[in-house]
Amino acid sequence: MDPSKTPEVKYTQLFINNEFVNSTKGKTFPTINPATCEVIAQVQEGDADDIDKAVLAANAAFDRDSQWRQMDASARGELLYKMAELLERDIDYMASLETYNNGKPIQSAYDDLGASVATLKYYAGAADKLCGQVLPADGNKFAYTVYEPVGVCGAITPWNYPILMAVVKIAPCLATGNTLVLKPAEQTPLTALALAALSKEAGFPAGVLNVVPGFGPTAGQPLVQHQLVRKITFTGSTEIGKLIQREASHTVKRVSLELGGKSPLIIYPDCDLAKAAQVAHDMIMINQGQCCIAASRVFVHSSVYDEFVARSVKLAKDRKIGNPLDASVNHGPQIDQEQFNKILDLIKSGKEQGATLETGGKSFGDKGYFIEPTVFSNVTDDMRIAKEEIFGPVQQILKFTDTDEVIKRANATTYGLGAGVFTNDLETAMKVSSRLEAGQVYVNNYFSASIQIPFGGFKQSGIGREFGLDGLKQYYEVKSIIVDLPFKV
Ligand code: NAP
Ligand code: MG
Image 1 (spheres, rainbow, N blue to C red):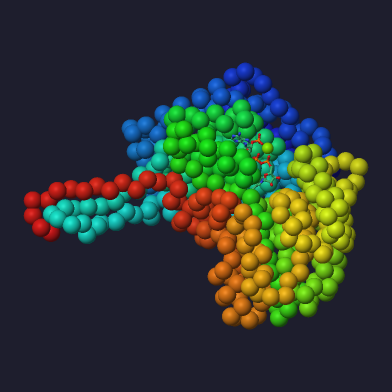
Image 2 (image 1 turned 120 degrees about the vertical axis):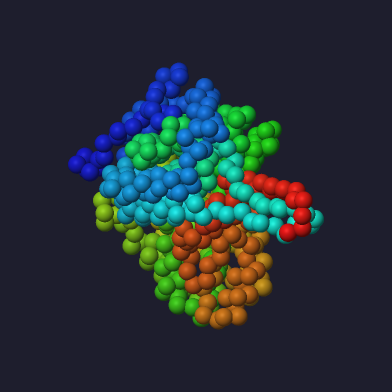
């Protein structure tokens, strides 16, 4: 790691009620640079007591007579817009901090920052455009709906897109007038804390946004269980998502979940094969494969299978692995030892179960959690690598011959986050895209998402949608007000 490019770490404490404070017990945990395995800093570790303090601050900020509750919706939008501008001002620092803590190539960190700014601006604009309806009710009544904030919300975010996932929770949550306690992933707390500092500079009242770093069972769980928290928004593994839904049921919290995937991408022979191979490659290697919607099962028509595999192998071999702060690098390390071990174990299972390892398959270098870009061909549906979420730079290429067969196989999973098809035949495109069970379906592209487009999972990939105006729905209650009139309108 080039020390001249190493960003200064300014914030390592909990952010509660607009102040950076130590944890109640004064405990800390190390945060690591995954490219070198070196400790970046000791971060204050929040537990149930700290979560309680943060929730009480958020609850006070949500009081009916508070500055926040009394604020015009347009003023909330202005605060979010100001936060976006501050993030743009600090984009170089924030991108390098993200790469330092997460290991993603610096260009990817800039992309995430760009998406974060766009998200803040989008929901800033939406803040004063949420309208209820006047209803043609039976009888002599004037009936209308208003959208009210849910109240104190809890957000639990993963380590793969630390700042973007924080912003995707913060922006719609605050645009609709809620208050929030955010627990970032234990591996990557630094950019969420830096963002908290920007929220204060933007002028958000104390208690509106609180950030408590810590661990799932000791900080995440108390947040899910807290009596005063009315809603939990979570992004992470399906396993923890189920646990959260169970825990949240005791207090009937609203729950929205963005979980895992094993997303299919179907390649027909009539498409632009060079483009399809490039997109399939980009969308499995994206973020070192640590992406919920990664194209992790590529079904290729038998007539172009060998050519597609050859193209994919070349693309994988051409990736530049190394220090993610170096702008020419496009492949960084995995997040931690646990993920590194899990990925290598799944690669081993692929070889043992009879898939052909075309390239990669090993760790890279002598420090950091690097894994070579890996391509498996001759993958069949029953193999672990075709069924389990690998969350690593490992491409699975499967073969198909018939449309009805491939649709059935693509849908034969408990997940349903993303799916794609490459074909230039309109009828095939329409049939396949309409029958794939996924929250986003792509035709001749993959994961070309943007802030205006709802994102979320069918089946066990989640509950609710983020992004777009649908992304606001999870943060408000619909209240119907019915007024008796002494006359017929
Ligand atoms: P995870 O355990 O689901 O972590 C996500 C978040 O949940 C983290 O903030 C985590 O805290 C927290 N958490 C863990 N246990 C909790 C509990 N009992 N109550 C409340 N919150 C809790 O994911 P992971 O362990 O980091 O990664 C494991 C697998 O999850 C990956 O291999 C991948 O398949 C999947 N994953 C999916 C996504 C996605 O975008 N869909 C993102 C990340 C990971 P800690 O920081 O202490 O873990
Ligand atoms: Mg974890």
